[in-house]
Length: 534
Image (cartoon, rainbow, N blue to C red; front, side, top):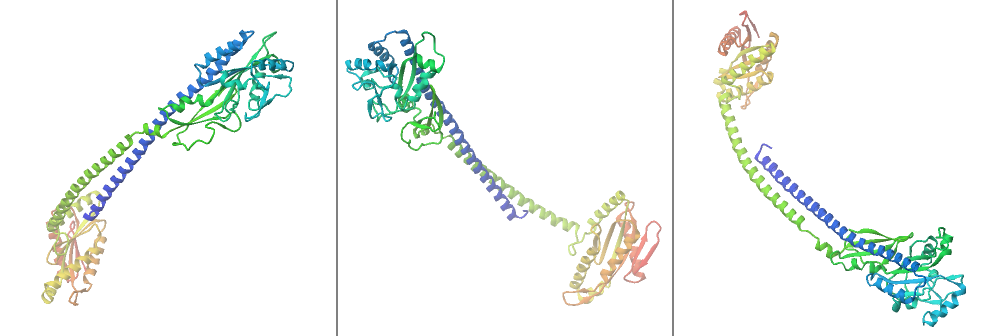
């Protein structure tokens, strides 16, 4: 990492990380924006669709209210003529295009059938009398004998519904269950979608039945009483497609839609009758439409036109803006790192130069050992540590025996090899806290700090003497052997200068040398006693 190559890789990693992070955040923000825009678009579509669904429900509710109005009309009129009925229906249909027809089917008992059929025939209606139809509304046939009939007598608008006059509303297969429910419960009931005789191949229709009862002698309360009091049925017919026309033609909503009858166990398609084309979006919304006794489900999908009209470019602009910001940030960081790299290079050069100066000032250039200046600092630190830890320091002076003969006989190059080799050996023999310094020539100073006893000093000096006596192999294949005379003084402290301690150690060293080479002498500063050992 400290090398220029390492810094280059590290800086490239930073730039790549910023770029990747910026791109990832930009893409994430883009998709978040797209999702948020989709949520807004979906809410807008739901709002518009709900408005139209409420309109469709309102049309259904209006139809129920109209049936109540028809019920009131029949209750209020003892004898309602066809023309009065026609005028009332046409006035209603002008404002309700979703209603295709309104029928009146009175109750006719079996003895009155012939008379009723005769009256219809006299008016040119119901050529086959009271009749039934097949489920597909493609075949009409005279009704068989039954106790009672509910033939449609009034069908308006008459022009398109005349063919229905005479149809027994109670016996139609598609609507029988709804008619019977309305008759026995006294409530409006809706039929499932069915084909109509007027247009069997056209859109499906459905009917809402309003039962009309006699209230004499008392209003009915039970199913049997309802059936007994039943006077007839007002039948309002709707085409669901017309209910949805506002949705189909809404350019603002412009949706794909489907209407299902979900009253039974299985949903029955009402519109469209065939399978709709694939939806352009999965953002489907559903609404329930409530009819008397039935439920429809209205499903809507936004169309391509709606989606494109409500598409927003904000996520794209956000993506481009964030990518541009990422590029600017990468460029800024790249320039900052380049400046930092240049500054780091300058600092490294300064540190290298400072290190060279320190080595020149504090270290011996040949052996790499501390010189006199650094030795002074190390001794001061040792004295401070001794006061803190309650230990003491020994200062030793070492002079090589026989080194002059090596220089004279083998040359200065061989002497330099001997000094370098001995410096390495002595460093290996010392602790990490000890200091080995070279004063010049073949003189060395050893500072042993943190001592607890004199024995530690003797062991160290003996170990140094043994290491120095070992033969030295030179580059010239020659082998030489030297020894050392050592003088040590202890305990040393800050009460005297380093030069004073070195002078005492020098005296001890010369006394050892005079006693015989290869010896060491320890001088105790307090008592002045000296002990010479080999």
